[in-house]
Each structure stands twice: as C-alpha cells, then as structure tokens.
Length: 319
Ligand SMILES: [Mg+2]
Image (cartoon, rainbow, N blue to C red):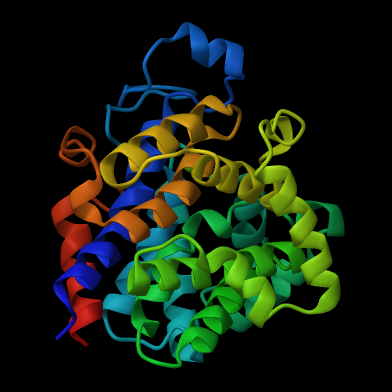
C-alpha cells in the first residue's frame, strides 16, 4: 500500500505533465511578444493545428505509451518492456497524429520496426546533429513510477536512459532524461524539487557535472532569453523548464500555476517545456494542487481522459 501523499504526488507527476502539454499547445511556436498579446494563459483550443481545448499532444501521447506498458507490469529495463514500448510508439505513429516530432518521425519511420534492438540501431544511425531533440525528455515522466521502492533510483535512471536511447541516441538527451526521472522520483517520495541538483552530486561524471552546473546557473538567472528560441534542443528545454520552476516563488497550487504560466511565456516549444516542467511540479505538489479547471478538460491519445491516467498510475503503484 502506497502512502496517500505519495500516491497524490505520483498522480500529480503524470497529470501535471499532461496539463502542461495541453496548456502550452495553443502557444506553440509563438515568441514571448506574441504570447503577451494573447493575455492570460488559459486552456485554449487550436494552435499550430486545429484541436479542442484541453487536448494533449505528442508529448503525452508518447508518455502514455510508456505509462501503459508500466501499468501492465512489464519491467521497463527488460527487452520485453522495451519491445512493448517500441510497439506502442509505432502504433501511435500509425494513427497519423497531427503533431509528431521530426526526429521521432524519422527514427520510427526508418524501418518501421517493432523490435527495440532494431529501433535502437535506427536511432544510432541518425546523423549526429539531429539526435538531441527534446522528444525523449518530454515523455520521461512515467518512467519513475515503477521504481519508487528503496534503492531503486538507479533502476529508474537506467530505464530512463534506455527509453531515451530508443529514439534519441544522444548523450545529453540521455543525461537529461536520467536527471529529470531521478528528480521526479525524488519529488514523488519527498515532496521537493531539489532532487534535480542531487543527481549531479551523486550520479554524474565530472564532465557531465561541469556541463550541467553551468546550465543550471543559466536556468536560475533572471532570464532565459538566449536559450528560449532553441528550446527544441533537449538541453535548452531543460534549462527553460528548470527556470520556470526555480525562479517562481510560492508553494502548492500557486507555485504550480505561476510556474506553468512562466514556462509557457518563455515561448517557442511551449507545450514541451510546460510538459517537462509540469511533470516535476506535479510530482512535488501533488494532483490536488493542480488547478481543477485544467484537469477536467484534459483528453487525448489514445482516447483517454484524466480518469484513464489515474487508473494506470494506480495499477503501477499497486503492483
Ligand atoms: Mg507536442
């Protein structure tokens, strides 16, 4: 039996990420000036393509592929688990989604394989400068959920790295997913966002530490204007998400709401930055702290609402 507050925070991670994705979708590709003209940040329809208000995009669709595999009780570190994720990704791509990342589309379409070893091979083949998109970080939220037991942090990070590699064979993408997954696990267990720096202290190599410490310093400064226009790159997406979280004061619902609004006002890849930030914010403050009006309208691939997300999270926690 999982403690009530841990369950609320596990739900918060998954629902928070989906809320960020759906909230940011209307503003995708807008710069901060365009967004300022639109007034208050709200759950609005449309965006780069027609969609109802509250509908999540590819970020949550892909995250749901992982969530479903974990809910079925498959080990995310096993070949069986990774094959099931690969199949689920292909099934989603075959549903002709309105939004699909360029890199994801290229990798999944290379051979159209259902086998995780072959997908990894296709992922490695992608040209070096095209591997570091934010598309694996945006879907990493559920990876922590099956690994909440004592001493399972390493297993969670291992799975996050393997799942990232499937479509993003890139060192920074892998590190970002491992770091964020560890932070989400830490937040679910302890109710704090401080697990992010703790990864660097406890698990990172010297070069990795140096690289990311500088990025965190940038993220925690007053502005991320230099990083925002290229936040389709995994590193800058993480910088923008952490900026929104770490430079917003307050706690609970107020912090969730204000940080989410800040994440979107950064501009450009708004759904993904808000999705990444929403996962960690929800994991820290819990599902109860997520504004009701943002939760009730949520829906999207594969025909789910918030009820279906809750069902999967509970299945994982009860296993
Ligand atoms: Mg998206």
